[in-house]
Image (cartoon, rainbow, N blue to C red; front, top):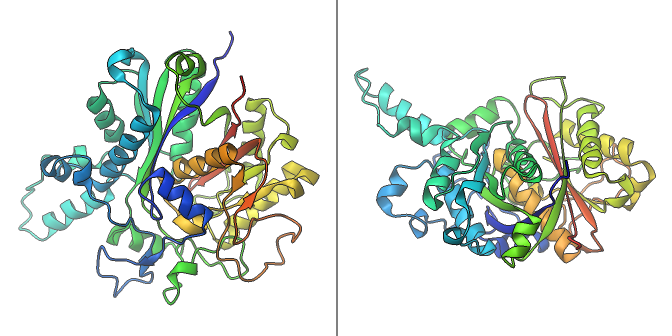
Length: 417
């Protein structure tokens, strides 16, 4: 069976450093930090008092007020980023076979704010279960592809992937496979997350996972820096429209890049800690390259998971050096989480967008907030510290790793006839 080629024809982003793809990309290249004091709730008694929140997001720009009240923020974010991606792709669903257009979405946690609010209401009452009828439909992760399919009338494959911080990368890999196997023509894929609330911040604080650099939030996310001490929570969504090449060419679509491979693996090591030697990380990158039928020497840029945690950063770089060998020193490596924070289940989507735009524009966004070299990292590796770097980017790899030991990587390359 001959596999179909799959290309990227639409992008949408709602991030802590930009509410559209152009805004997001410009902020990445300029090294803008999205971190600041949390405004959504009183943090007085919390260890971490800052995060990468969205700025000036108004859901009523994408839906009416009545509908917005029925949706958890993680669903609102998904609808907003998808609106941009659909417009960007210039898909006219009235002229296409919508039975062959699907939606595959990722989120690690889903409607945690809805759950928090409903339980708060219940426990503050007399014990009578006066539950909002929209409680369950607002909270469940698979409701996002449901809403998107209903909005656009899409009857193709429709489901959600849940693999913690790897969720939206797994969604993209599934979308890629459905299209290249000829089962569908177009899939709207991506991820969204909304965990900046008492439950989300409190929960990650209890795990000692978050940075507590409350005196300097804007520099708290510092991947590969000697003084990194935890990740910074982020929120938002990213949408990537994947399309079968001939279908895209027939309708004259613009093509950002080609997706050529996806890899998955498990650490099989610990529920939260990465494998100390990076065995799962090495395997997932190797699997992605094998799927793409590419050699390590053909990759120019890796958008790494790079969360700014003491163990995670070391594990990932060890895996890169082990897999890429001497070519590791020809790579640009960067962690855009230094700017956006960690969007958990949405991280794969917005970071894939960064990788795609790096391939398209031949420029690598930086890893900001580097102040002190860590002797555990080889100083000859190019972490793209503090400043974007122009270079030819023939192909890029995007890594995402999640609690539970879930690893996923995707490969994008320049589109050629």
